[in-house]
Length: 262
Image 1 (tube, helix red, strand yellow):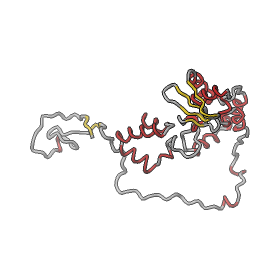
Image 2: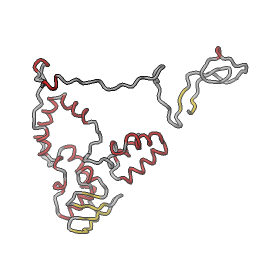
Image 3: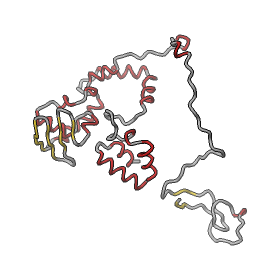
Image 4: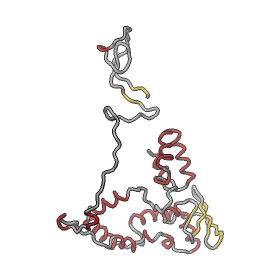
C-alpha cells in the first residue's frame, strides 16, 4: 500500500516509473490493471492532464454531496475564512511555512532575467518565476512555490506570495463560501420543470450473474499464506475429515490446520 501511494503522489515521472517498477515486480497483475485498464492519467499526479493542485480524489460527486448535506458546516467555513489574517488559507499556509526554512542555505544562480538554477538539498531545481515552473514539478502541479522557487524569489527580490496560485489566497477562500446554502424544503413545495418531471430515466444495464453460489473470497496474492479449513488425519490431504477418508494408507501426521503458501 505504501508503494501505491508513493506512486500516486509522485511529482516527477522519473520517480513514478521507479515506484511503478517496484509494484510490477511484487504485484504484476495489479500493475497491468492500473496501466492498461485504468490508465495512469486517472490516478497518477504526474500524469494527470489538467490542474489537480493538491487534490488526489477524482470523485467530485462524493465531495459535493458531503458539502451540500451540511449548511451549518458551510456557514462555519465562511466565518473561519473571514477571520483569517494570513495571506493564504490555513492548510496552505501550514504547508508553505516549513519550506521557507528548507530554502535557507540554497545556492542560487541566475541564468536569465526570469530563470534560476537552485542547488543544495537532495534535488536541484531550475525555476522559471515568470511561468511559475520548476524542474522538481512540485511548483507546476501544486501551484505553490517549492523550496527552489522560494530561494529563487528571495534572490530576485520578488514576493513569494506573488507566485502562489490565487485560489490559495484568503480572498478566494472568502469568495468560495460567500453564497448561502438554503434547505431543500418539503417535496410538495419543489418547483420541478416539466421537462424534468416527464423525463424517463432507465436503470443501468445489469449483467446476468453466473450460475452457482457467488464467490465470497478473493484470489490470494503470490506468497500469501492462508489457513486451510481442515486436514485429514489419516491420509494428510486437505478437504475432508478422517471419518470420510477413502484412502487405504495411514498417516502419522496430526489433523491440525497449518499455514501453507498458495
